[in-house]
Length: 150
Image (spheres, rainbow, N blue to C red):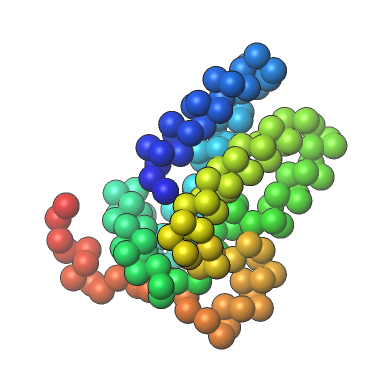
């Protein structure tokens, strides 16, 4: 999904949550959008580049080649959700972050399901470790891909 779509979805849900969470709604909104930081980390790790614009180009490339992908978006995993849940006993704001992550994750899963690619992303770090040895990793764009100005 696009950054714009996630911002709009998170904003609408934040407006609904504001009477219940008050100022903490900001935590929900920010976490529901910034969970995608892991996509930037994927880009840096795979492509060895640091441009934010390049990250968007890379993920457009991935979306067009999704049949070739079995990826790990670390903040989109059950493992991270469990850590946030446990930390929530220490400070309830971790539960708000968890809710933001889960809302984002549900929209992502629905989008992948609609496109029939629900299993193109690992749901757990352990699942990724077990399956990635025998499956497809992120395709790396050819060097010429980066030379084209968009």
